[in-house]
Amino acid sequence: MENKTMLSLMLLLVCCSSLFAQSPALVYQDAMDFPVIGKYHQEHNYNRLPAKYEKTVRPAVWSLSRNSAGIAVRFRTNATTIGARWKVLNNNSMNHMTATGIRGLDLYALVNNKWQFVNSAIPENGFNSERTILKKGDSTWREYVLFLPLYDGVDSLSIGVNAGAVLEKPQQSLLPDKKPIVYYGSSIAQGGCATRPGMAYTNILVRQLQRPIVNFGFSGNGMFETAVGEAICETDPSLIVIDCNPNTSPELIHERAVKLVQQIRACKPQTKILLVENYMYEHGYFEKDVHDIVFRKRAELKKACDDLLKAGVKNLYYLPGDGFLGDDHEGTVDGVHPTDVGMERFAAHILPTLRKLTKDQ
Picture 1 (cartoon, rainbow, N blue to C red):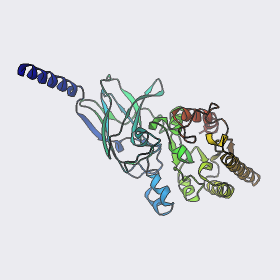
Picture 2: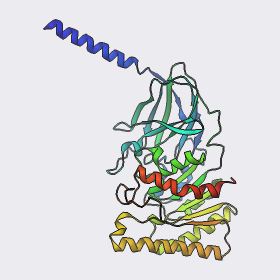
Picture 3: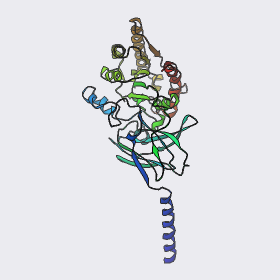
Picture 4: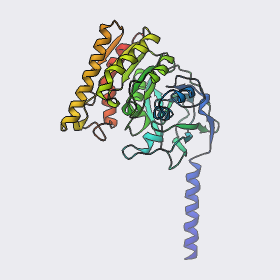
């Protein structure tokens, strides 16, 4: 019996050592050493707004701006093993969105000039995580983009590769070489409720357009605010999208939309602006009050657009709210926020308009 026990222990040790041998120690480098896309300022962080805005935007907007939605890191390596080590700011969690979407990372590789999903870095149960994303790959040189968390901030991030591999700045200029789209909106724009960062529709569009998107989606707080307009004025965008109807009461939409567009037009005389209507929430097909408020919001935004055009505002465009999530009513988590299927449909619906409006940028 003792011999059998010893033999079992020895076999267990051999198996464990074999497993450990498959995951060699990685050599880590600060992700800030590489190009960061989706962030318009130069501060040494992964926040969406620079520090000065803590004093000018509402506290809720400032807090949400520290979530790293839409921010990504570009790099190049010949590594066979790639990992990430990161610390989040808040260790957020929600009951209708995955931890990977909230606090995780997504790695994509450039294959035949398209971004192909590699794997996710699933967060651990705490502020600090360390994950191997790619194991036992080949040593082919590849360009990568690593998408950051949607609903938490990043305090620090390092990228790891196997010993002997080279980790360097990208050689190809895809993504950083084009002027970004600035997208101002709600929780839906921020990425709720994608299962992982790469499936937020704004990040899907980044890959399809080969163009960065500065994500100014603020969950529950996309409200046509001129304080956010000040930040928009500091960007150098190819297009500005305003998609704030979901979070704004009908009584405020006309006045705020007009003021925000006028503010942006004053600082960006030629930049195209796209106003986007809210789509119908699923329960709105059954609840008359929800149905009516959706249409009231649409009417107020359309009136604001018409009034701005009549006042001589140029390069202003409008996208109605029908058709974003398909017609089978299966595109949301909770009747409001898209699933990954809904995110793909949203991206597919808005993509032709964004292509048309940015084709000369």
